Length: 236
Image (cartoon, rainbow, N blue to C red):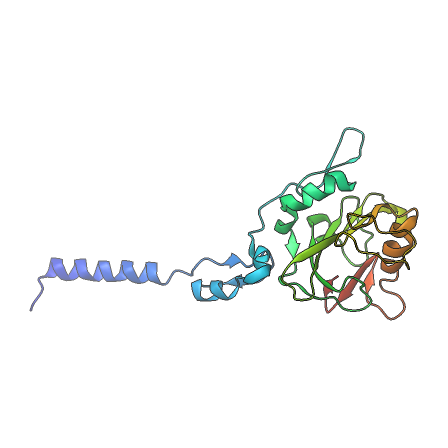
């Protein structure tokens, strides 16, 4: 079958336009809020978590930076946990912290952690702090505590930087374990609802348990800095 001159020109133009569109690079999009990227939908399927850790695949929606009130105090919000269990418990249940930079899966916590099975999320202020820097006011980490099977969250541990210094009292410490847990070895008894610590590190379990352990980060054979342990580049 033959083609006249105008038809041949039209076919060549159409072929050139199709080739130009088909050869455009496919957009790259972030995986799980990190620096890694995926090229196509086949890779996208591999990036999605399953089972109890499905929350780790939540898109990291843009959130405002740490906010202060008129008196210079921290104002609770998507990037800032409130202080005090009355406000903190519902804030945790709301789940804004899951849009932070989170470890993908729950795992057995490495030594010297006393938290057994965990998954940790870090806010922007924490992530943007270099190892040589003291964490700024507003830096925060939320640690989900899991059952041995890694299928259910059974508690939380929260660190919130509330002072500009580098001392236990510059942090607010919160930990809750299953209700009814008893540990006579602790400096303070665990509350009936499972609250282990709920205060800045000036005394009690907040100082002698939470801060005492985290103060060894980077010392005594451990890796880390300024109350944050690290293992293979990941903080815990």
